Every structure is written in C-alpha cells, then in structure tokens.
Length: 496
Ligand code: ADP
Image 1 (spheres, protein in one colour):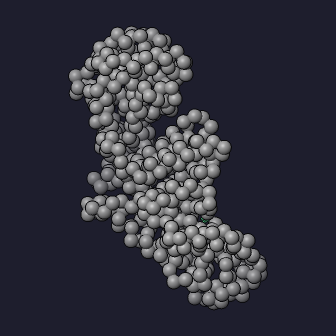
Image 2 (image 1 turned 90 degrees about the vertical axis):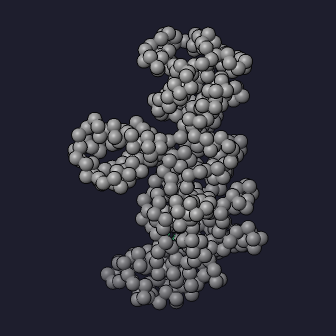
Image 3 (image 1 turned 120 degrees about the vertical axis):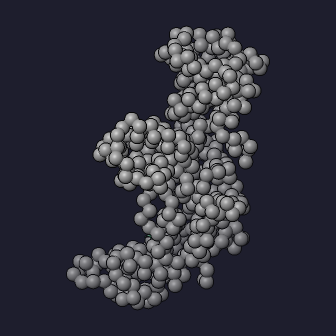
C-alpha cells in the first residue's frame, strides 16, 4: 500500500502546503467541508487562506470579507502569480475553466514555476476530474467521507439549534451517528434536522429514518444498491464447505479480530454455472455477519466520458468504505471486463481501480465477486492472493439436491419431513438450485389449481418436465471442472 494512503487527508494537505505544491485537485461535493479543513490547516501553518468562485471573485476566509472581484479565469491566474507563497487559494469549480486550452496552458505554466513562487492552489468541485493535459501538473487528493466525530458534531449543532426531547441513551446516540456514516455533512445535517423537527423527539425511530435516507443516497449513486438482508444461510442448501468457510470468517471481521492481529478478510470469488446459488450465498453473507450488503453494478459504472467511469467506480467504492463494515457484492464480474465494449482501455482501468481498491482498502469491506464465465475473466483478476479464496460451485450432489428442495419446501411454509425428497433428488440429476426451486414453485401452482396440498408425486411430475441447463452446458461444466482440477479454486461442497 502506498504510504500516502495511510496519511489522513489533513496530513497529506499539510505536506503539500509545506512543499509549496502548485496545484491540487479535490473532486468532492463537500466544498464547505474542504474549505473549513484547509482554512484550519492554513491557520495552523501561519498561512493566509483565500477562496475564489466565478460569481463572487476572491474572498478572504480569515477576514471573512470579499477581495478582488476577479471573475475571469485569466485574470485569476495572473493575480495568483502576484500573491505570496505563504497563501493557500481554493478555486471553486475551476475545473470548468480548464475546458479552455489557454487556461490549461496558463495552469501548466503556473505549475512549472519554481518552488516558493506563488501560493498553493486547490481546485475543488463535484466532478473535478483532471484534464489529461494537466495530469503531470497536478496532484489529486481524496477527501474522505466525514468521520464519526464530524457527524457527532453536526448532531450536537442540530440539537443545540432545535429543541427536542431526547429519548436516546449514549449507546443509542452512537448508533444514530454510526448509521449516518456515508452521508456528507450537509446530508447528515438535513436528515438529523428532519428527525428532530418532525416530532420533537430524538429516539430510536430516527435511526431508521437515517438509514432510509442512506439507502436513497446509495441508490442515487447509480452503481450501488443497498439490499435488505432477507435471506440467511438457512436459505442456502448444500455448499457446506463454502458455508463453513464463511462462518469461520465471521469473527475475523470484528474489531476484536483486528486487535488479535488477524488481517481483515478481503473477499471471496464464487464461480459456477448460473443458478448454482452464488447470488444467494452473497446475500446470505450479509445476514450471517449482520452487516449491510451493497451490490455493485459494474455495468452501471461505465460511461463514455473520459475518466468518468473510473470516477464513478472510485465514488462507489468510497461510499462503500464509508458504510463499512459491509459486504460488497460484485455481481457478474465478467461484465466488468465486457461492459467496456470496444473500449478495452476503459474496462482495464475500471478493473484496475477495483483491484487496487481490493488490495489497499483499509475499511472492512468484504468483497463477494460472482462469475458464471471464467473464460471472459482476465487471469490477473483471479490470481492467487487477490481473493482470500476462490470457490467453484459445481452441480449439486443428490444429498445437496435434497437439501435444496427442503429449503424451498420449508419456505413455502411446509415441513420437508412430509415429503420423500430423497426420491425427488434421485430423479433430478444435473439440476441446479434454481431449477430445483422452480420444481417446487411449479408443484405449488399445480396443487393450488387442483385445490389440494402438494405431495411428493407433484414434485416428481414437475421435475420430469424440466430439461436442466446442464445438459446443454456439458462443455462449459467440463471446462470449469478442469479449472478446479488445476487447483485454482476450492470446491464449495465436500463429500462428492
Ligand atoms: P447464481 O447467482 O449462481 O446464478 P442464484 O443464487 O441467483 O444463482 O440462484 C437463483 C435461485 O435459485 C435462488 O434465489 C434460489 O431460490 C435458488 N437456489 C440456487 N441455489 C440454491 C441453493 N444452493 N440452495 C437453495 N436455493 C438455491
């Protein structure tokens, strides 16, 4: 991990200020938070702090007053040159200005100046992606999401401004603050205010309100989806080795395990034919470990705009880190590679962003990557050490088929003991879990239509109607098994 990633944002910024780095870029919607942090740091270092925007011109943060009303980009740059180097100048939304080639040229000239000549400049804005011509001239910094302490301070502000009866004990308050992780400070301020103003009470129901807000926010990010943990390990039939592996890792995810010296589990890849229970397992992990499950839609990350795909990927991953501990499920990993279409450069960079993140993430985000088709995956994606383990989900054995049938019979509200599921399992060789679930669903329809309850005979009759996908997928199964035999993956089930 590069050392810089360990440094807190303020430390990184301090290094750049001391070194008189000419040009920094921060892509964030949290402009006010960035200004507050930077101004505080400048004060500590005995530097002046100015901001600029296209409407108001320059403004002195320390003195709280407007200065030069420069609104033209060239005018701004020539004024910068005249300023002393013990200043920090924050240019809001200046990334729009560098669409102009002459502004880019001027910025590059500015960045090529000798050190100690002129202030450090921070360009801040939502979507402030560095122009390719400026890559050499700039340093990009990431403003991390608000910490628990910053959110706590916002809650205190809100409670000071609005009277509310407090029915939360300290642990409840902590839970409320914790559930706001991932929100920006402004979003947190809005939702906390709404929570106390709505009914004049601060209580446990407000936690649900904050979580609801967060779900909507995650949905708005476009690439992440917050899934409700409606399925648990009891809904997964068979796959005993995989389930045991996950069970053993549960505590590995806890703060106690970190203190014990265990590294946080990175993630697991699940490979197998469609319908073998990969998605089901991903969903069950969230419930098993009692943490939120976020589905990352790699297809939604791609954009035709230069640099935008990586930006979206970084944004989604940063959001996931803010919500950690959580499980990040990357569905159909092969899409990450294919979605780039002809533009293999973009898909390589997006996959690269994912891989780097998986290797370097410090927050406990456990990745579950699922894939149907390994032939479309670049080998480096499944290289040893990338994931903690790679599991192969084969066609279920007869015993596993009986277990899967039992899961679905139970989910229909019936006792599996009332059926001869062994007999049905014996007649469903080659069926995957999804097909077995379908057999139970079909049998229910038939019995309901005949005004009676289902029986083993209905299951057998419905099973006879199905031609399992595996029949037409022999070659693919053989390829997957060959891959397993090479020792590149672990079987998800024992005793076959
Ligand atoms: P995959 O992600 O491997 O393509 P899914 O997990 O989406 O397959 O499976 C689809 C559905 O099939 C599940 O929602 C579940 O109803 C059923 N199913 C698949 N495998 C199993 C299993 N091992 N145990 C119980 N149900 C299963």
